[in-house]
Length: 121
Length: 121
Image 1 (spheres, one colour):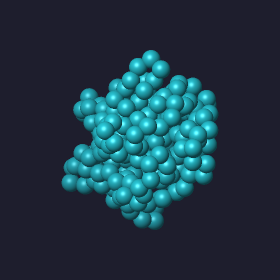
Image 2 (cartoon, one colour; image 1 turned 60 degrees about the vertical axis):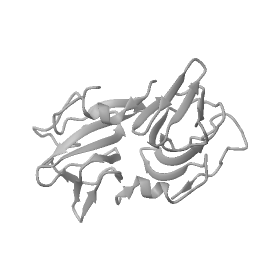
Image 3 (tube, one colour; image 1 turned 135 degrees about the vertical axis):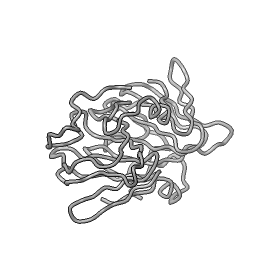
Image 4 (spheres, helix red, strand yellow; image 1 turned 120 degrees about the vertical axis):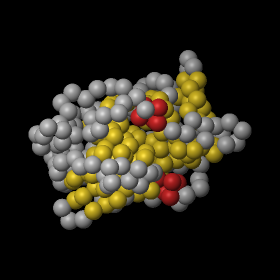
């Protein structure tokens, strides 16, 4: 129960698409991730997921439209909604995620990018 | 399910100590509040609460110590832990809160500052 500086936590890792846990409350976890280029189309059947942008521009594609999130923006993807996160021009985008503890970041999809045991930083 | 700019949402209200809801997921709500001067000592028996600072310096007093949170910092107060939020020198501090939907901001304490029906912005 001490103050955590979010940007300092971002500076502790460099891998892309590997969420790191920085907090836990009410069965939910706060995670940081660095997105770059393309992820995979996926959805989470039981879990809503919050994206909050700390650096750069995140493109979130849905089956019916595209949302562009800039620094200081947030968006909640409801459970069951397929989404495809990506960045443009090789930009690394820093994202805070808020989601249930059990959430796998690739949702129902098994993929080479799936990280099974997410770690605390 | 559209992007929300957090700073723009902060600019939509001016009252102090009246959390405004900007998102909901997994039974939790994302709220914004402007703290100024002193709140009240309280705890939440069943709910952990996250504070994330967007402007200014928040002092969080606990019974055994004091934490100082600056812009970009976050802290999770576990359920049952008494805390007393305040600011110094009349500064208005912008705070994002993450907590279960049912949470009353004064916890178990009934106080003139208790806002019963928190509104969406």
